[in-house]
Length: 417
Ligand SMILES: [Zn+2]
Image: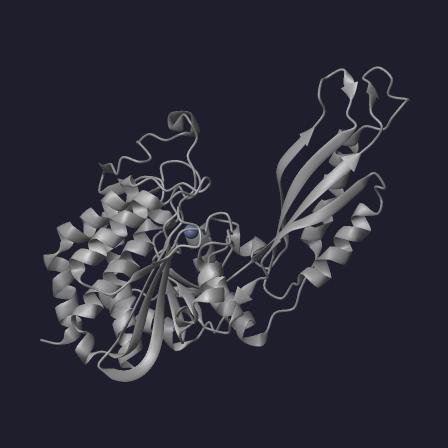
C-alpha cells in the first residue's frame, strides 16, 4: 500500500478519535481576552504524549503556552511548518442574547455540524495540523525533510506571546513553507491578507453646560465630523504587482463565495471601521472629550507611509483632535502560483472534485509572520461560519476534508523535495 493510501486509511479507521479530539478541543475554553489557554494546551499535550511524538512547551507567558514540535524524516529535504492557534474569540455573559442557539462551549452537534466558539476559528485547522504531525510521524523513516508543529496561544489580540514570540526566539519555526488551517472556505486558498492599521483619536475641548453651547465646541460633534471625513480614505487607489493582478482578476467569484457578496469589491480598497467611541458624561453637558478607535485595513500594495499623511491631512482640519497608532501589521502576500498551492489544489480535486482558487484574505492571520520573513505561507481551512459572532460551526464533513487535505498536502510537499 502507498503511504498516501495508508494515511487516508488511518484517517478513516480513526475517525472517532480524530473527531473526538476536535470536539473536546472546542469544549476546552480558551477565550482571548483574557487568553488563559491552560486547559486547551493540556488537551493537546495529553494527546501528543499518548501518540509518542516529540514536542516541548514554549511559555514566556505561563497561562498562554505554545506547543512546538519538530522531527526529521529519514532523508534530507524541505522543511514544512504547520501553524495554528489555540486561543479563540470571547463570548459574552449571555450567549443567547448574542444569538447563540447552542452552548458556545458545549461541542454540540446539530444537523451534521459541530457548534462552538472556535469551531471554525480555528480549532478545526489546529486539529488538522496536530493530526498531520502525528500521522506523518508514524511514517517518518520514509519521509523526506523535516516537519514542525506550532500551536500558539496569543493570536486573537495580535498578542506578543504566540507566533510573534516563536518567530523571534525559536529559529526552527521558520522553515521553507508554512501551512495554516484558519478559515478560508474549502473553495479558496489564501496566499495573502490585508494589513490592519489601528489609530486612536482623542478630541479635546473645554466642555460646558449643555444649554451653553456658545461656551465650548462639542468634542463628540467634532469627532462625528472627523469620522465622516476619514471615510475619504476608502477612495484611495493602489497599484498591484503583476502576478497579483492576474491572480486577483481570476478570483472575484471565489472571494465573494469565501467571504460573502461584496468582499471582492472591498478587497483592493482601504476600509475604515470605527470600532469604539466614547464621549460625554451626561446628556445636559457639552462633552469636553471624545475618544474613538479606527480599524483601517490596508490592501496589498498600500503602505502605512502612504496612508498616514492622508490621515494627518484630514485630522489637521480639526485642531482639537490628535491621534496615535496602536497597532500595525503590513499587508502580506506570497506567490499565488507557488507549488504548495498546486499541491493543495490537486488534493482537493482528488478528494472533492474541484480546485480551490488562490485569494487574498480580508482578515489577519499569523501566516503573515512567515510571509514577512519571505517564507511562503498558505491558509486552507473551513468556511468562516459564525466566526467572531454567534453559532460558529463547521460541518463534520468539512472538518474531515480539512484534515485529509492537510495530511496529504504536507506529505506531498515533503516528498516533492
Ligand atoms: Zn484565527
